[in-house]
Image (cartoon, rainbow, N blue to C red; front, side, top):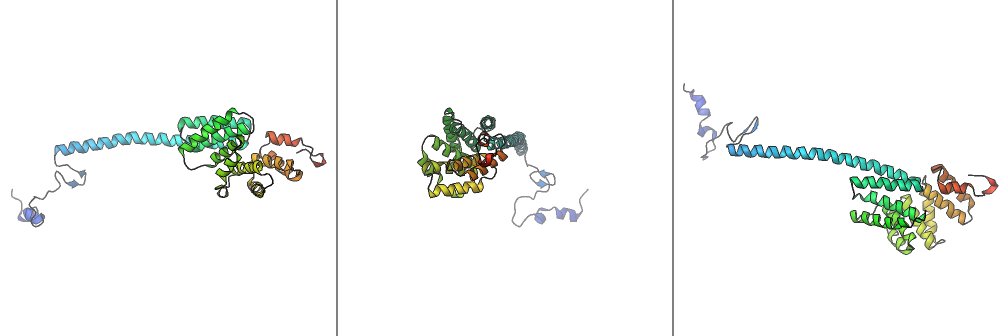
Length: 274
């Protein structure tokens, strides 16, 4: 049967094509964008489309599990980092050792984690300077160098470790030179403690030293290491009232802290025991 005239006219080339268009107009056939998507004109194009689709699906199959694994790793690293922070804040021999062990677990997941490297460097520096274990000094320097290699931006644990290393190596001037240009921008109590320690070693009665001590008092809050440092600082200068105050604060922060326990047996005025 012959299509009605108006139907034939509707699909005629001179009706659908632009003026001067020599190519026939394609309807919803090969090579057209249809309601079900793009339909290629040739079988070769179809195979290309299938290959591209398969590649995309393969990449998705690889990327999605990788992303999930990375997310789990980051979560595990963050959890371990939080545990490291808690251990360092306890300021005890056993807890510094624990922080180092936690750091080893972090490095199995991310051996280039600059903050974790700096935290381990700090733990080693304290074990060297406070607990007399000289072998930890080399490890502190090693981990600090690794942290600095991974990140050009210094973090607070790295700065504190650097200052402690300088004190241990009798390089007080170099330690101060590294901190003084940036110290006014830093509120971290451990960095401020390291800075005050350098100044006390350099110029015990200087104006800068007194200002650094005052700032440390201001921000010491519940940091047991800062309170113990301030307690002994004031005690050595005969200021028993302030010494007692800081030792009490240290005891309240960490009840079993060695220096706080030692301070309890000092003959405080009135015979009172902390």
